[in-house]
Image 1 (cartoon, rainbow, N blue to C red):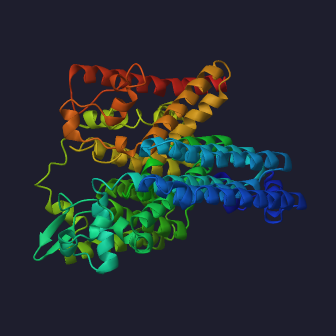
Image 2: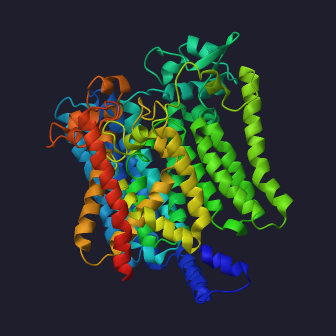
Image 3: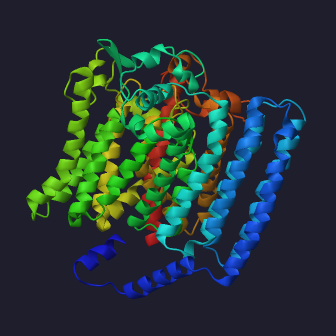
Length: 626
C-alpha cells in the first residue's frame, strides 16, 4: 500500500493497480448491496435469534432466581442477555461478508452460544456458587464469542478489503471487552491507582474543578471504591489538594463517567482497545505483511493479556498505545509525509505527556522520526517545521500552564517533579529491570503472554523491512520502544505492582506485535520442520489464551505486591495454577525482586533462549530464500 502511494505520487501507476481498484470496488458494491440470498439468510437469522433472545430473557427473569445472591443475580439477569445481544450483533456484521455456504454454517454455529443460558441457570440453582465458579461459564461466553468471530473473519479474508477486516477485528475486540466488563466490574473493586484517576474525573463532573480536598475528605468515591481510601495521591497546595496522576485519562473520562460512572470509563477503554486492534492490523498491512499474517498477529495479541486485560483496568496506558501506533502510522510515507500527516502526528505526540509522564520517552522517539520526515526533503521547510512542531508545542505549553495554575511551576509533569526527592526513580540497573520486564515470574510479560516469544523470532525481519522501504514507520515504532524500555528498565519500580503485570510495557506493545507478525510470517514460510514450529507457536498462543482466561475468571489473581514478593511469596497466579500444573510454573521463571542464585541462573537461561530465537529467525528466513 505504501509503495503504491509512493509510485502514484511520482505520477506512475503500478502494474495491476487498475485491476486491484476495480476488484476493491466490486467487493464494496457487494457489501453495500447484499444479494437476495444474503437478505433471506439474514432475515431468517434475525427471526430465529429473536425467538432465542426472548426465551433467554424469560429464562433469566427475576422470578427464576429470586433467592440467589446479588452478584450472580446481577450477572444472570442483567449482563448475560447483554452478552447474547452483543454476540448476535457481531455475528450478523461478520455474516454480511461471507459467501452463501460459509454464512449458513456460521449463523447456525452462533446459536451454540445460547447453550450458556441453561448451563448457567442449572449451575446457579444447584446451590451457592462463588463468583469464580460462575465466571468459568460467563467468561467462557467471551472466549467462545472470540473464537467464533475470528473464525468467521478468517473465512472472509479473501472477500473483503483491509479496512473491513480491521473494522471486524475491532468489533470483535469491542464485543469481547464489553462482555467481560460487567463481570470484572461486579466481582472486583478498583485497586492501586485506579480510584485516584476516577476521583479526578468525579471532581471534574460534580465540582467542575481539579481541587480534590473535598473529594478525599468526603465519601462520594465509595461509588467506585468499597472503603475509605488509605492514602491521598496528591499534593497539598494551600487549602487545595491537586492530584499527581496525569490528567489525560480523567479529562477523556469526563463524559463516560458522567453517563455511567466507573462502568462508563471501562466502556471507553474497551472502545480504545477496539480502535487499537484496528490500528494494529492497518499498521501490519502498511508494513506489507500478508493479510493472513497480519490477522493472526493481531488476533493472538490483542485478545490476550495484557491488552485484553487492560480494557477493564482504569489506566491511561492502553490509550497511550493507541496514540503511539496512530502517530507511527502517520510517518509511514517518510519524506513524502504531507503537512496534514505531520500536523496530526505532532498533535498525537503532544497528547502523550498528558496521558503519562513515562510516555515522554515515546514522544521523544516519535519526535526524532517526525523531525527527519519534516526536514530532510528541504522544501517548504518553514511550513513543514511549523506543521511538525506547533501542535506538539501548543499541547505541552497547555500542560505546563495547567501545572502552573495547580502547583505554581510552569513545567509539564510538575507533580512528579515535586515528589522527586520522596521516592527514588532511576537506579541505573537496566539489566535487572530489562530481564524482569520480559521474563520475571510475578511481573514479566512472557510468563503470562508466551506468544511474545515469537517477537524474538521476527525481530530481525523488521530490519529487513526497514531496508525495503518501510524505514520511517519501523523507526517510529522501534526508537520510542527502545527509549521507553531502557528508561523503565532503569527505574526502581519497573514492575509496576498493584496492577496486572506488564502495565509499563503496554504503551509500546505495537512494536513487539510487529515483531510477532514477523515471527509468524517466518514460521509459515518454512517447509522443513514446519509442523513442529507451528505446533510450538500454537502452544504459545494456547498458553497465552489460557492465562488470559484464568485472569478474567479470577481477577484477584492479577494483583501482586512487591513487598510480598520480596518477602518470598509466589505470584498469586502461580500459587493457584500450582495446584493443578506440574512442574509449578513459578519454578520456571526468575524473580528479579529476589536476586538469589536460582533467579540469577533462570535469568541467564531465559536470556540465552531469547538470543537463540534472535539467531534462529534469520536462519529460518535464509532457508526459505534458498
